[in-house]
Image (cartoon, rainbow, N blue to C red):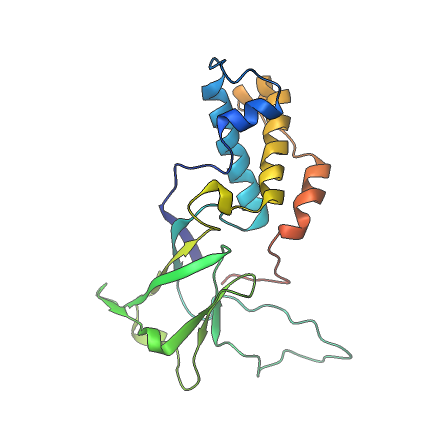
Length: 220
């Protein structure tokens, strides 16, 4: 199995409450709804990040894996296939958040929970692909799992996000956050009652070009 943990969050949002007030035609000198608007911004960012498979502002994550490779993606094959391609390359690991700025470390644990750092000379970070990947260099191999603990044998700590400031987030995605906050505000009674509010199909269509997709991914 694979597990993702948020290690360091950010207290910065792509939009300020004043920007949201302006879009909602609320007087910026009226602070009565600031707490509610902040909750709506936070909820909108979380929903959009999960939908897109992205981190908007830089956060630190830990990816834990029981074994490597932890996924086998079905390839799109032309023609007739009678079985699996056993020669399929398994020399990389997908990172479940994009964009990525760095991998802080890659560790593996033996059955006594002792950590060993996998040398950076063994791999490089492919930040161009989406989803991003940790890729083995030629002649390198991942540690043998036979001597490692059964669960969470591998730990990869990485930074993901467009940057540390709201200006770093693409304007189109910021606009999507603004649209969703407006939708939550229009349904604020349901929001404050913590009832489910469907995401508008128009918003999904607007954000779809920025969604990170994988075909036939299986976590194991």
